Length: 422
Image (cartoon, rainbow, N blue to C red):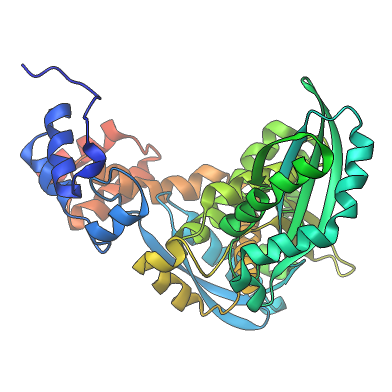
């Protein structure tokens, strides 16, 4: 019997196929697993191997299309990559219900990112702060020399901020480099600038620089979206008032807000992932922004206009790009961007914000009317059918009977499938 071990020397030097064989041996995997992981789908193994370390395969996530979206007067098809039932359908339904009022309107605050340089070991932090500010022109020169291509495309250094923070280890002086990253997400650009500037800050102040890294709280890169839903389209004043009550709950209670914003991110993260952008960066920035007041609250706002209609709005950091990273190296991400027809990162961010608002509307309406489970479980029933072994037409038949019984469970699905097969 082979002893299982996580120690596989030189694994990173092997090809994906050779790695897979080694891992299969170490984990005791069968030939069927080797065949399954060896099929990397529409992402070639060599491409996957260039994206992350120790690649042995790919994990395919369903890519769906949300319809009915009108954004800034344009009809837009929305590619969404997610494994969760009802997410794509929710956006389709929410978008359909606000088409009569013009759909979604979006805007961006800009494309500015922040890199932080941490300075410690200075006994006079206020003095050091002014020393750094006095060298703004020098800092700009260093930053722009670090990425001349970004400057050529209209981006580059824009400003500095210097903050004094009191930590457990003593005072620290934190310099923010404010950089316009244009159509790039910008992490690599601003990180490189922070690395280049840090030694000079230490030299000017006599202190020691430690962390040199971007902030994912991209509050200089806010995406905004708004829309109006008429009472006629959503089912009347009672539905509107139920949505407002659900929003009010989320805005004052962090326990509710966490799930409320998770619903927003169901839509946001699905488009971010489909376009090859960084889901973790966007999610971190969104949740940090939701807590900027000192209490975690809603990313969305819901109100009543002068005519009694429901209005919704969202404002959140959205650092996404069209160049660099998986947005260009992953062929499916490139196709997703082609489907969207976007030419700027600002446009992409606005679309993503609109999707987040649509997703939130759909969730709030479900909560205020039939309850979230009815629609979600109806779609989830197909997953349950597949999990118990249903194939072809059996999937729909099992799912329909599960919904009819009101018991979307594996044991019930197994009984239904056995009955179907006689």
